[in-house]
Image (cartoon, rainbow, N blue to C red; front, side, top):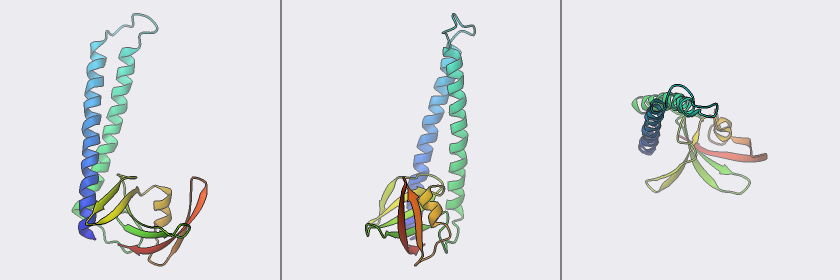
Length: 162
């Protein structure tokens, strides 16, 4: 299972790097756009320079957050924690008691909502702050957890935690 975790972690890290690169390109474009406009507004409707500056600032903030996320993922890869119960870096296999489906969820700080197929197994990544992930925190094999998703209560049986 550790191999599957590492493969998925690499895929999520690659996605974060791609997002970071796109954000950096956008930030540089916004800075260039800001510099291309005159300092003084031609009229009260001429806000191109200010808008580009705000955009560059937003892109910079997003870039900082992505770098933090990438650092956290790198630390997980460098020293993976030992998993004994539902927690960050755990793969929780849970059976939905409402419809009988069983899904493997990988709890990570990024990459939520993406499904990966590795070694014939499908694993759905969910962010550790998501309601379902919070319900799985501290759970062990055999536990039943309840979570409200989009106003509906769902009941899950924990099949395994690795």
